[in-house]
Image 1: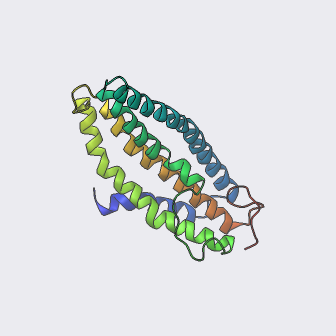
Image 2: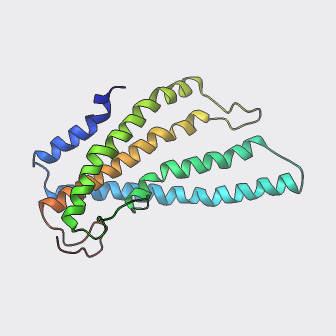
Length: 204
């Protein structure tokens, strides 16, 4: 992995937007498609939370009431937590649920927020996602080549599938970042009738 590998997505996105060939309508349409994808993924993954709670409760009951324990069952809820956290990250970004430390952002004009979001995606989000992707890819490839399972006796098989969550995380968050950039671009090109998430937005 080189520095160039991490900034290629940002360069491509910047070049496409700077060319002016993308209309605000097209930007909104593509962003809407990405939003729909992450909304669907997030809703599906949310059901894993229920399964995780039930599995954890079952482990406790079996261990402390019946004095029975299964390594694979204990590992399963740890894996489920990882899947929810990683695969649901794009959904969380869609709904602006990540921690944001800001002083001026929320009270600023829509155009100012659009500039901040666009810069954040191009300069920070996409390079970080690309760096994680390229760093994780050999790790995941080796795991697949070995059809890796748990190192614990009686543990979960299919660890290679669990590790695939890492590039999936990069893809979903990266796509949501592109959606944010496209929405920001549309705001800067022409005023939207509504705000970023469909709510009435203030005038720039």
